[in-house]
Image (tube, rainbow, N blue to C red; front, side):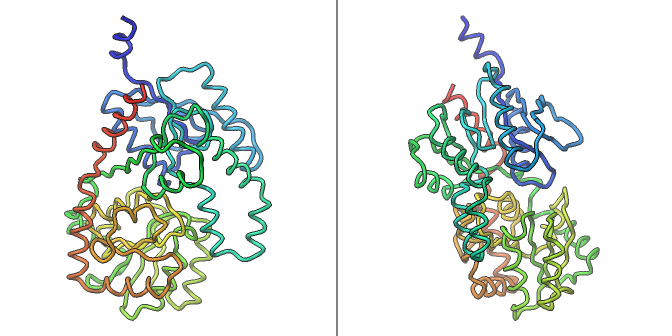
Length: 384
């Protein structure tokens, strides 16, 4: 009788994420996933330190924000607060998006920290490498990551790409059947090629970009990690005239603008800041470039492909799972400037762009928000 009553009640899910900002990729995933899950009757509680949004859309918000100084104490204090809040157990399932050992599920949206540090070393000098090696914050994250993945209470890890799944399997002692690849979903109606006709022209007019000019788009915060310096160098070397729009909010913007002046491309690169609605910028663009040093699977990749745009990204981006280089996008090593430049030049061919864009849209046609929520729900019910 108790089991029947349990099945009739809504599934209760606690989602853990330290902080919500309107421009974060992981947070945008959470927002989309919560909407899709709520439509299926899941009762959601968000446990967060700060949730910067104008309204709560049908979920409960539980704040955990103990006093802190510095990011190490901030993260450790948040983890302590969450564990205290979850004792005794109040939810059917606890899904963390932070490295907190003891949760039922962990979504590895931030990838593997050890792998990120390995990729970052490729562009660091000796002193920078030493500073990372002695930084207690990185030691804390690496320790928490190992405790998380090897914790006996962890029942499943949601990996947003095969790349992340394989990195976890290679680095940690974890049963392979706990690693589940569930790609993020994308709103296939909102991000649709049909929007190009009526939205793209307005953006080009606002920023004085000619209708026939090749327009490349970079979207994201974390300019250095996502490869913006390489993009700027490639634009400077291109034999095909091109403009670049940079959409994103980053503390390094002034440094990137200074780099455009040194490279002589300041008049061809436009920084428009962070935007809540990026659809008009996709609509105006001819291609999206994101040669990231390390990115588990950015929402930008799915959004660009859904908009029917060729995507130029790196082998260490989870979106490489979906890219067949030369057919629906291009793959390049994040530091291979010569090949990156050549790939951007190839986007100067309108016929090639159109064919690649159509293939890109077809590639993600099955990755809807509904498909994602169905896979998540199936996993939740399997665990219950």
